[in-house]
Image (cartoon, rainbow, N blue to C red; front, side, top):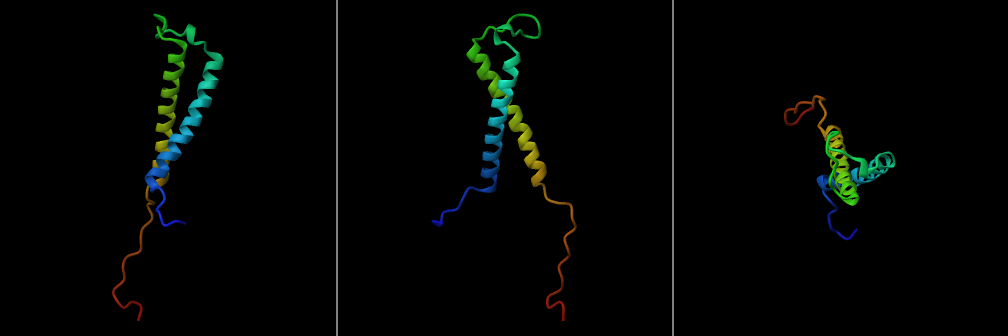
Amino acid sequence: MNGTAGPTRIKRFAMAVAWSSFLAAGVLEALVFAVVDPADMRWFGAAPVQLSTQAIYTLSFLIFWAVTALGASLALLLISLPGDEVKPGRHAPGWPR
């Protein structure tokens, strides 16, 4: 090693969440838009969405990325919580004799 410290734990978690959620959002978008045509999309069944196809793809990807990042962040938070085990108490100095 060259003596430099690596990324901190929080940075590693952020990189893991960002990368895995990016990949998941890409797969999810491919699956959704294999079935749904962006030109046929409507706002809750009423007016058609007045966005270009590329804008719909982009916004959908960002929404999918945010939702999957939230899920991955919550999973990492639950994994990294401290355990509930009871720690042994401290012993008096000089113990055992």
